[in-house]
Amino acid sequence: MEYFELLLLGLLLVCGISTCLTKNLLSSLVIFMAYGVIMSILWALLRAPDLAVTEAAVGAGISGILMFLTLRKLRDLKRKHADETEEKH
Amino acid sequence: MKRKKSIKERLREWDADAFDLTERTAGPMHPAPAAPEEEKPEEPPAPERETRLGSRALRILYSVLAALFGTVMLSFLLATASELPPYGAAENPVHNAVSERYIRDGMRETGAVNIVAGVILDYRAFDTLGESHVLFTALTAVLILLLGEGVHRESTGQIRMQQDRIVTNTASVLTPIIILFGVYGILTGHLGPGGGFSGGSIVGAGLILHSVAFGYDRLGRYLNIKTFRIVCFAALAFYSLSKCYSFFCGANGLHTVFSPGVPGRILSAGLILPLNIAVGVVVACTMYGLFSVFQRGKI
Image (cartoon, rainbow over all chains, first blue to last red):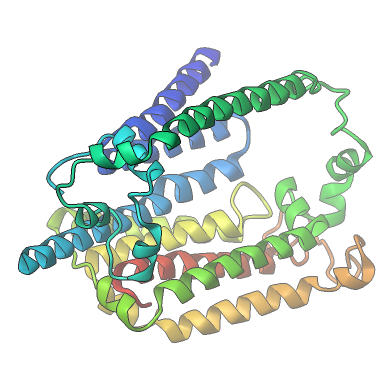
C-alpha cells in the first residue's frame, strides 16, 4: 500500500510540474485533470471519502470543462482578431 | 501571431513596458494575446533598450533583491515548519476537548452517522453559512460579468458543438446513472460520504453531459433562468433562515426542536438532510448555470 501511495505522490509531482511546463494549453489542461484524478485517489487513501468525491467531480470534471470552454473561446477570439487585422492591412 | 515568443522575451517586453496594459483594458474587444504584436509590428527592440540603459542596472538590482527576498522568506517558512508538531501525533494541540467531544458525542447529539456532515452542517453550520455566502457572492460577480449586455455579449458568442454519435450514445447510458449517483450522495450525506456539495456537483456534471450530448432545447424547457432564480433563492433563503438562530443561541443547537432521530435512518439527523438537499440543488444549478453562461452567454 505504501508503494502505491509513493507512486501516486510521484505521479502527482510529475503532473503538477508538467502542467506548468507544457506549452500547449490543451494538453496542459488534460494533465491538470489527471492531477485531479490522482488527488482524489489520494484523498480516498487518506480516509477522506467526502473530499475524494468532491475532488473527482469538481477538480477532474467541471473545472476542466469550464477551462476547455475558455480555451475554445480564446481560440475563436484570436481567429476573429486575425481576420480583422487582415482586413485592415 | 506567427512568431512564437519565449517566456523570457515576453517578460522582457513586460518589464520594458511594451505590454500596454491600459490599452488592453480600455478596449473590451481587444483579445489579450495578440495585442503586443499589433502595437509594435516589426520594430526591433534594440533602440529602445539603448534609451533605457539606466534601467538595466535597476533590473539587475531588482532581480537580485527579488532572489534575496525569496530566499529569506523561504528560510523563515521552513524554520517555522520545522518547529511544527509532528504529523498525526496523539499529543498535538488539535486533539483538544472540542474534537474529543465532537467524536464522542457527535452521533448522539446531531444524529448524523457521517461525522463530517454532523460537524459542518450542525455544530459549525454557522461557519458553513458564511462560506456559502462567500461562494454565492463570487457566483453573483461571475454572472454579472458574463451576463453583461452589449459589447461583451457580441465578442463571446455561442460556441457551437457538433453532435457526435459516440458522445450521444455514451451520454444516453451514463447520464441517468451519474444523476442518480449525485442524488444518492445528496440524500445520504448524513449517513456516509457525500453531501450537498459533492452530490450537487455530480448532478451538475450529469446535466452538463446531457446538454453537451443532446443540446440545450430539451434541458432548457425546464431549466431556464426563471427556474434557476427561483430554485437558488428558495434554497439559499431556507438555508439562511434555518441557520440564523445561531445569532441568538450561539453554538447551542436546537436539538430539542429538530430531533436528531435514530442515527442510521434516512429521515434522521434533524436539519442536516434538508440542508444537504438545499445545498445540493443550489450547487447543481450553479454548475450547470456556469457551464451554460460560459458556453452561450446566457442560462
